Image 1 (cartoon, rainbow, N blue to C red):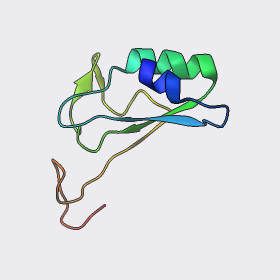
Image 2: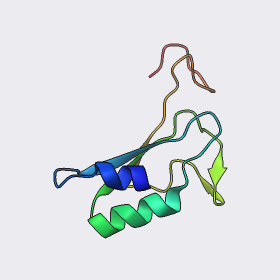
Image 3: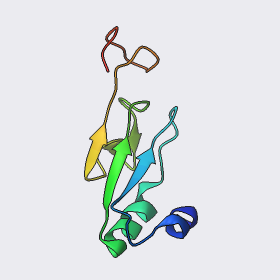
Image 4: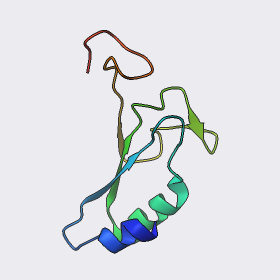
Length: 81
């Protein structure tokens, strides 16, 4: 969160958290910072389908989340993005 805080500017509208290869982002401090600053949280949970963090599905913490089924992801649909 220290690195995120250092990079925030008055123009910052959102923080993007990328959960990668079964390693979820520690969402509690990120959400607290976002609330403090009044900015949105976007989660990229494409590599975390079916995984949980703090007893909740990854991708369910932020204001919006993204998933992907591209061929290099855990669950694919052929050429679906």
